[in-house]
Length: 122
Image (cartoon, rainbow, N blue to C red):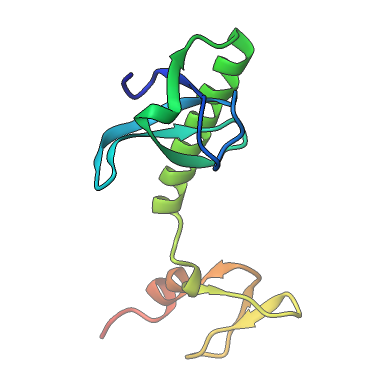
């Protein structure tokens, strides 16, 4: 099996037997050859090669697992594109204040944008 193939769990205790997943990783570990499976619950698990067997699931299961892969790739992309959460300014009242000029900022406004515009480097 290679990444992109489907596999069914046949042994082990982490995942119920009969669960079908999408192989996203395969390789050697300290415990022998293993596979990484993406399950329909969006959980990622790593299992020994003796605990899984290749399969051809129904079209519905294939589509749902491939959709999860797309979602996880999108999430990774947006996580890389979003500003660092520590720069988001939030208060319970729904407004925030710049630490330098005391100007009121909208809720969830990116503080770095405000500083680039209003407080350029000298």
